[in-house]
Image 1 (cartoon, helix red, strand yellow):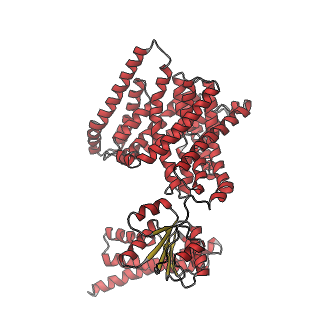
Image 2: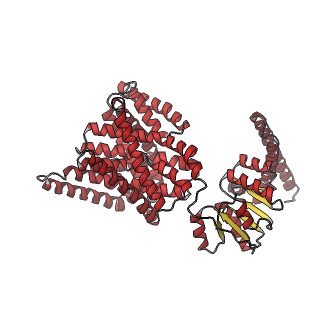
Image 3: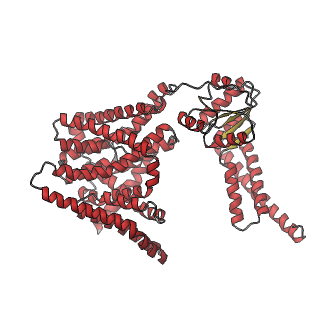
Length: 601
């Protein structure tokens, strides 16, 4: 018991220390767990020695991860994304696997070993790739959508890859054909039980448990479901993760999906973190010390091969040059599922322990290099290609429209539709070619081009227009456009969208007459509805909302006057303003109470 408690303290302490540091450095939580494992493992401080037992136990984190992925993969959603997923994702996995398999065979590996290694190396880290895309707000761009499609295909492709490994193990055998057929029959029977149970038995079971009103029992049933299916698949000789994934897909449209995901998520996160930590402990750093040239050559070779395949896919899908390099760099590293595939390949005798150790080091180092590749792209590569577009800019037609709208995203679309409804002519500029082609099918007059270019603004009729609506996503582009319009078209009245408070302050510095914070009014309306839901009269909720709005707008001007000063000064201003607001609201309530007492209501 003492040893178990001590190990638990060591794991948690290592994670608590390493993961926040890794996140702060931009390396991501996965690399934080890997680093923690390396530090406390046999090649670090030697605090943990029984790595294999921990690794086997922590594989339940991968099982739960695939169960959650299955819950999120609604069949209808998959069908809508089928062509990008199958085309881009299938092309990347098949292309990378083919090239790496040939390389492995040329190196003298048996074809089964070469294929198993290539399958694992073709996968990328979803966690590492999605983090920069989310932070940079790039998931909605063509490059972000393409990367997400490939990652989604890879997550799905893990399942057939795991199912293929037993076939690679028994393929050379001739005398074991009858045993192979028995194993296949067991596999089919296990999958059939999961499909039947998931469709007809689980919902009544969850309904009965939910009626008890005991949350802990529902959580226990959720864990029992996942672990029971994993045990069934293990007895059938198949991957535990395969069964969990199938169960998740079957429950994706269940009314209990969100409840299941919520209950499984904490266990999944902890066990998955333990899995990555165990992988870090199992990384043979001695290989990097004893064979540095071989290991580093394999890491560079992996990144080059995957990068070239991804570049080919990007060019075939006509991805813009400004997004191509980041797209390739984000997906060129290895992924966490490679560890699972290599471990399974070792269990089936396809790989020996030395090969697994070598490939594990290669994948871990490639994952560690991903943030460095992103920095390389930002500093050296993207500045060279950011102005290079595959599609020439449109030449807008000067139709004498009084309004020019720059940016036709979620914000600009509403403005344009309102103006169209009132028969006001609008010239729209946007830099997303895919969105423009789609909107033109709905008869919107949208032109492809960078609104920060003076020649395009002139061609759009900025010299004669009355209003410029700045609704672009990029804060930098927004300010650049305002500066350009104020310098060359002083007659234009500028109406600008502000993404946040600092952006609003920059627009105020430029004396933009009309500034709208993109979520301010909708949040006010929602707050007003909340007050009414709490039982306050509609007129009172409306009055309090208007009072808050006026107070907030006045505070914005006060903060702008002191924006360049010390932050303590701004904090003091906000505290004083909050106190004044509370006093005003209390005075309004007393006035309303007095009016009701006099019978004026």
